[in-house]
Amino acid sequence: MQAAALKAWAGKDENIAIAQKAFHHRAQMNHLAALGQWTKEQGTKEPRKSERLKHKLYA
Image 1 (cartoon, rainbow, N blue to C red):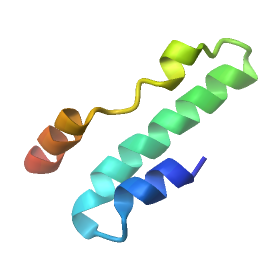
Image 2 (spheres, rainbow, N blue to C red; image 1 turned 30 degrees about the horizontal axis):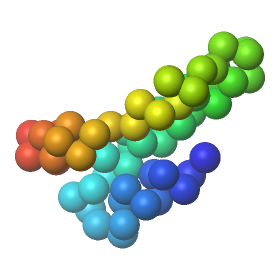
Image 3 (tube, rainbow, N blue to C red; image 1 turned 180 degrees about the vertical axis):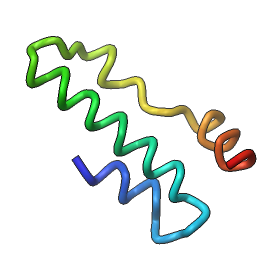
Image 4 (cartoon, rainbow, N blue to C red; image 1 turned 45 degrees about the vertical axis):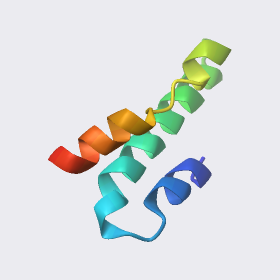
């Protein structure tokens, strides 16, 4: 579950918010899977690069 967040963070302080968002998304998908409510479409809705950049610029 941590892999996406660690990849997004890349050891850089400026990527902390992006990494937190990625971790939160994975946690939500894990929760839905535990309830049997996860779908492939939900699981592939990672933040897009443009959304990450927007968040990075305004965070």
